[in-house]
Length: 180
Image (spheres, rainbow, N blue to C red):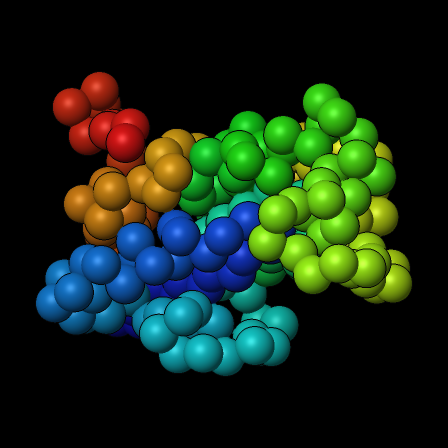
Protein backbone atom coordinates (compact mmCIF):
# COMPACT_ATOMS: atom_id res chain seq x y z
CA UNK A 1 0.00 0.00 0.00
CA UNK A 2 1.30 3.44 -0.93
CA UNK A 3 1.57 5.94 1.88
CA UNK A 4 -0.21 9.26 1.34
CA UNK A 5 2.04 12.20 0.44
CA UNK A 6 2.07 15.33 2.62
CA UNK A 7 3.71 18.60 1.56
CA UNK A 8 3.92 21.94 3.34
CA UNK A 9 5.00 25.47 2.51
CA UNK A 10 4.82 28.88 4.16
CA UNK A 11 4.25 32.39 2.98
CA UNK A 12 3.90 35.71 4.81
CA UNK A 13 4.27 35.24 8.56
CA UNK A 14 6.76 34.14 11.17
CA UNK A 15 7.15 30.39 10.40
CA UNK A 16 6.00 29.63 13.97
CA UNK A 17 3.54 27.02 12.69
CA UNK A 18 6.35 25.06 11.09
CA UNK A 19 8.28 25.38 14.36
CA UNK A 20 5.23 23.95 16.14
CA UNK A 21 5.30 21.09 13.62
CA UNK A 22 8.86 20.39 14.71
CA UNK A 23 7.66 20.48 18.35
CA UNK A 24 5.94 17.18 17.69
CA UNK A 25 9.37 15.65 18.45
CA UNK A 26 9.22 11.85 18.23
CA UNK A 27 5.61 11.93 17.06
CA UNK A 28 6.90 13.15 13.71
CA UNK A 29 8.20 9.58 13.35
CA UNK A 30 4.63 8.33 13.76
CA UNK A 31 3.53 10.64 10.95
CA UNK A 32 6.42 9.39 8.81
CA UNK A 33 5.21 5.82 9.37
CA UNK A 34 1.78 6.87 8.07
CA UNK A 35 2.78 9.27 5.28
CA UNK A 36 5.54 10.24 2.89
CA UNK A 37 6.59 13.75 3.91
CA UNK A 38 7.44 15.93 0.92
CA UNK A 39 8.70 19.50 0.78
CA UNK A 40 8.46 20.07 4.52
CA UNK A 41 10.84 21.66 7.02
CA UNK A 42 11.94 18.10 7.78
CA UNK A 43 13.01 17.23 4.22
CA UNK A 44 14.00 20.80 3.29
CA UNK A 45 12.96 20.30 -0.34
CA UNK A 46 12.29 23.65 -1.94
CA UNK A 47 10.79 22.48 -5.26
CA UNK A 48 8.66 19.38 -4.75
CA UNK A 49 7.80 17.18 -7.70
CA UNK A 50 4.69 18.19 -9.61
CA UNK A 51 3.08 14.74 -9.44
CA UNK A 52 0.75 15.85 -6.66
CA UNK A 53 0.27 15.15 -2.99
CA UNK A 54 -2.62 13.89 -0.92
CA UNK A 55 -2.39 16.64 1.72
CA UNK A 56 -0.97 20.14 1.26
CA UNK A 57 -0.37 22.31 4.31
CA UNK A 58 0.05 26.07 3.90
CA UNK A 59 1.17 28.43 6.64
CA UNK A 60 1.04 32.21 6.43
CA UNK A 61 -0.99 34.94 4.86
CA UNK A 62 -0.83 36.09 1.27
CA UNK A 63 0.64 39.54 0.72
CA UNK A 64 2.50 39.35 -2.59
CA UNK A 65 2.36 37.63 -5.96
CA UNK A 66 4.91 34.99 -4.91
CA UNK A 67 2.64 33.96 -1.98
CA UNK A 68 -0.33 33.84 -4.32
CA UNK A 69 1.60 31.60 -6.74
CA UNK A 70 2.54 29.22 -3.90
CA UNK A 71 -1.11 28.96 -2.84
CA UNK A 72 -2.30 28.25 -6.39
CA UNK A 73 0.44 25.66 -6.97
CA UNK A 74 -0.29 23.87 -3.71
CA UNK A 75 -4.04 23.87 -4.34
CA UNK A 76 -3.47 22.43 -7.81
CA UNK A 77 -1.12 19.70 -6.46
CA UNK A 78 -3.01 18.75 -3.28
CA UNK A 79 -6.15 16.66 -3.02
CA UNK A 80 -6.75 18.17 0.45
CA UNK A 81 -5.54 21.64 1.43
CA UNK A 82 -5.01 22.65 5.07
CA UNK A 83 -4.58 26.28 6.17
CA UNK A 84 -2.28 26.14 9.20
CA UNK A 85 -2.23 28.93 11.78
CA UNK A 86 -3.97 32.25 12.26
CA UNK A 87 -2.09 33.97 9.42
CA UNK A 88 -3.34 31.33 6.96
CA UNK A 89 -6.86 31.14 8.42
CA UNK A 90 -7.68 34.86 8.74
CA UNK A 91 -4.54 36.87 7.97
CA UNK A 92 -3.25 36.99 11.56
CA UNK A 93 -0.50 39.42 12.48
CA UNK A 94 0.52 40.20 8.86
CA UNK A 95 -3.05 41.41 8.23
CA UNK A 96 -2.63 44.17 10.82
CA UNK A 97 -1.17 46.24 7.99
CA UNK A 98 -4.61 46.09 6.35
CA UNK A 99 -5.80 48.70 8.84
CA UNK A 100 -2.98 51.21 8.48
CA UNK A 101 -1.89 50.77 4.86
CA UNK A 102 1.18 49.15 3.38
CA UNK A 103 3.30 52.30 3.24
CA UNK A 104 2.67 53.15 6.90
CA UNK A 105 3.46 49.58 8.00
CA UNK A 106 6.70 49.47 6.00
CA UNK A 107 7.72 52.91 7.25
CA UNK A 108 7.18 51.84 10.85
CA UNK A 109 9.04 48.55 10.39
CA UNK A 110 12.03 49.84 8.44
CA UNK A 111 12.39 53.52 9.30
CA UNK A 112 10.52 54.71 12.40
CA UNK A 113 11.08 51.86 14.87
CA UNK A 114 13.48 52.66 17.73
CA UNK A 115 15.64 49.68 16.77
CA UNK A 116 16.36 51.02 13.27
CA UNK A 117 19.58 52.82 12.41
CA UNK A 118 19.28 56.54 11.61
CA UNK A 119 18.74 57.01 7.89
CA UNK A 120 17.26 53.52 7.36
CA UNK A 121 15.21 53.12 4.20
CA UNK A 122 12.43 50.81 3.09
CA UNK A 123 14.13 48.08 1.00
CA UNK A 124 13.56 48.32 -2.73
CA UNK A 125 12.17 44.79 -3.09
CA UNK A 126 9.14 44.39 -5.37
CA UNK A 127 8.01 41.25 -3.52
CA UNK A 128 8.19 42.84 -0.07
CA UNK A 129 4.58 43.95 -0.01
CA UNK A 130 3.08 44.36 -3.44
CA UNK A 131 -0.56 43.79 -2.50
CA UNK A 132 -2.58 46.42 -0.74
CA UNK A 133 -3.78 43.95 1.90
CA UNK A 134 -2.82 40.61 3.38
CA UNK A 135 -5.34 37.89 2.63
CA UNK A 136 -6.12 34.55 4.21
CA UNK A 137 -5.52 31.51 2.03
CA UNK A 138 -9.24 30.80 1.57
CA UNK A 139 -9.58 34.24 -0.05
CA UNK A 140 -7.33 33.04 -2.88
CA UNK A 141 -7.92 29.28 -3.20
CA UNK A 142 -10.41 26.79 -1.73
CA UNK A 143 -9.31 25.35 1.64
CA UNK A 144 -10.54 22.01 2.99
CA UNK A 145 -9.45 22.36 6.64
CA UNK A 146 -8.55 25.35 8.80
CA UNK A 147 -6.28 24.82 11.81
CA UNK A 148 -6.24 28.08 13.81
CA UNK A 149 -3.74 29.10 16.45
CA UNK A 150 -0.68 31.29 16.72
CA UNK A 151 0.90 28.85 16.41
CA UNK A 152 -1.39 25.84 16.61
CA UNK A 153 -0.41 23.45 19.36
CA UNK A 154 1.84 20.57 18.24
CA UNK A 155 -0.81 18.13 19.51
CA UNK A 156 -3.38 19.64 17.15
CA UNK A 157 -1.01 19.53 14.18
CA UNK A 158 -0.18 15.90 14.95
CA UNK A 159 -3.85 15.00 15.26
CA UNK A 160 -4.79 16.65 11.95
CA UNK A 161 -1.88 15.15 10.00
CA UNK A 162 -2.38 11.68 11.50
CA UNK A 163 -6.12 11.71 10.77
CA UNK A 164 -5.65 12.90 7.19
CA UNK A 165 -2.81 10.41 6.60
CA UNK A 166 -5.17 7.63 7.65
CA UNK A 167 -7.93 8.86 5.34
CA UNK A 168 -10.10 10.24 8.14
CA UNK A 169 -11.64 13.68 8.44
CA UNK A 170 -10.24 15.48 11.51
CA UNK A 171 -12.73 17.21 13.77
CA UNK A 172 -11.27 20.14 15.67
CA UNK A 173 -13.25 20.14 18.88
CA UNK A 174 -12.96 22.97 21.39
CA UNK A 175 -10.83 20.91 23.78
CA UNK A 176 -8.12 20.61 21.08
CA UNK A 177 -7.86 24.33 20.42
CA UNK A 178 -5.87 26.59 22.72
CA UNK A 179 -5.02 30.24 22.33
CA UNK A 180 -1.89 31.55 23.98
